[in-house]
Image (cartoon, rainbow, N blue to C red; front, side):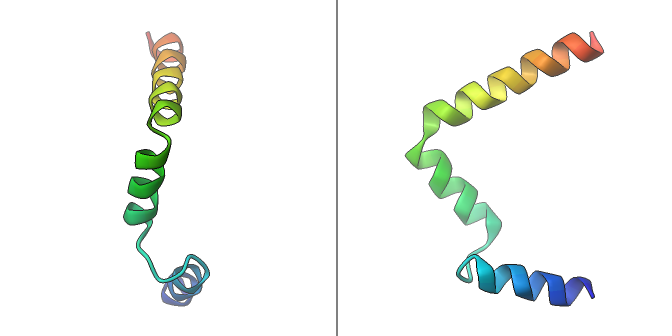
Length: 49
């Protein structure tokens, strides 16, 4: 079942691994990723500090 889900996802995203998609997106929008991880760090810091 998991194998079928993986094959379906693989065909839906154009046959490229998720890591390549994230890497390409991060290269296109570095400021957005930086702000997103910064915000996530702030939120987690407030929750778990």
